[in-house]
Image (tube, rainbow, N blue to C red; front, side, top):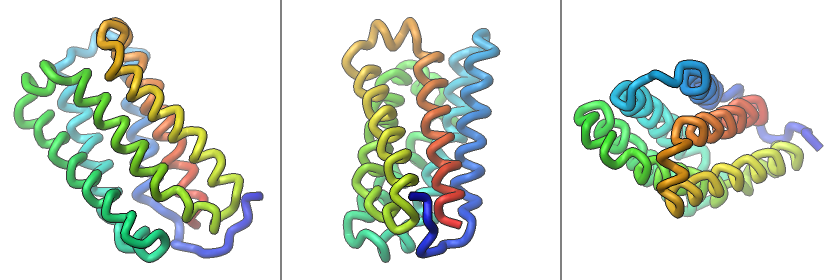
Length: 178
């Protein structure tokens, strides 16, 4: 179920991304007084790191899944741009944070679902865990987009849940690719 056939080597980028996502989630859960400006800046850095992680794995991913990996590259660039926006102009990030997070969650989840097939080579267990976590991430993104009132009321909790899911998934990928 979790057999290892092809090996990339331990994926430190995914591990670091997963840990940062989980740390950001813990800050949101246990420090609710964190201002939206700080939230925008912190997630700016998280988006940049996520984008760099996606871009750094592009060539290996392209070798495994073909041209569909271009979508991952585009998402990586979008992550970088969103991150820069949140850091350089936090007020713009604050005003649009609900929708930006919704689109970010949706696009990242779709990207991972499009390229998920390569995980079967690492073991079907990793494939199914990642599939379930990516679908949960996609559903959270859609909920943010469809119901902005719920998003406004529970933004920090929803973001924290998403970050935990995405963080755990990134850590699973780090170990799957070793």
